Image (cartoon, rainbow, N blue to C red; front, side):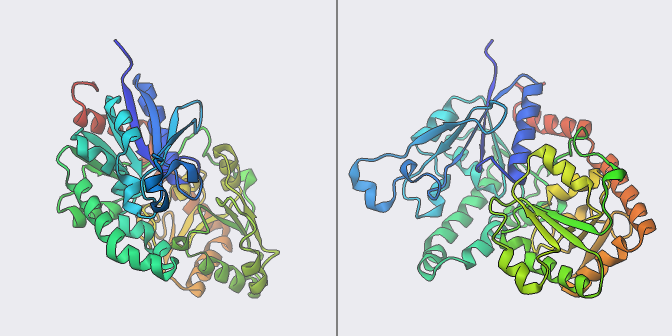
Length: 400
């Protein structure tokens, strides 16, 4: 009997929370004897030759694909599309997608918003989708930065089509929807008119994300993620650090997660905190674990988060979390137990940071609370059991 094969529809699986989820799913499928192929839309900005824009439609060109192995030899495919100017075309299944879908026994979408699962709908195949956030929340800030002709196109064409595609995914009878937080579950239920099948939290790897009290540096705080993403609201954190600096606090901020670790330099110089902030590019899992263990506090300044996986990984290292009220983190940032929740004001964020970093005993209590929360809510064995149960519900004849 041949080995069952899963097709995982996702985004470019190279950095961030979605690739971390995808790696975990690939690993869990391998544990039960299922091989995986990971596929994604290869953005026009990174691979012009794979997509066919409007000016090349009559040239005879067709969308292409490139074979890639994102990690550990797992096969992957970056796939182009017709008319990449229209964002909804990124999620339509061209001939490369059709071949992959037809050749797979299982179909999964591991994604930020629900749209990566849309490729499965024309074929009526059962699918399991693990979703981080609604479509609108995932891109609203990016749209604000578009030039006005593109904003007009988005309002007239892309937006309405993408919104309809999202509803089709969430309401598809052959689909089983998982989310990463209660916040996302409630948002998706409001869109679909039905509740998702469950919440599945990505468990931190205990061999990597573990406490090391000797590594902690007092007053060294940090954030890990795509800190250039406007949803992360990084200016709020920089303003809080500047305020703490003016108050004479010995705060140091570390940021990791962007390819370009220099783009913040003007903002740091303008605030007079260039010597207080250290920016690092994207880190490997081993590197990130080492960085997290030396932080006194993980700080989330975002105005929207589906969860913030890196913050959960920090808690597994015994690092408390201070977060704005921005959605997903409210599942695990429990005031007085694992950290603090604050409003979106620099003074409030600075006060919360000082209240923990400036009081070692309080910080120790919160560290213990963070570890207790991880033990109760992010156990790898329990997550594995839940994932397999959902997979078996979609594929009862294939998964025991």
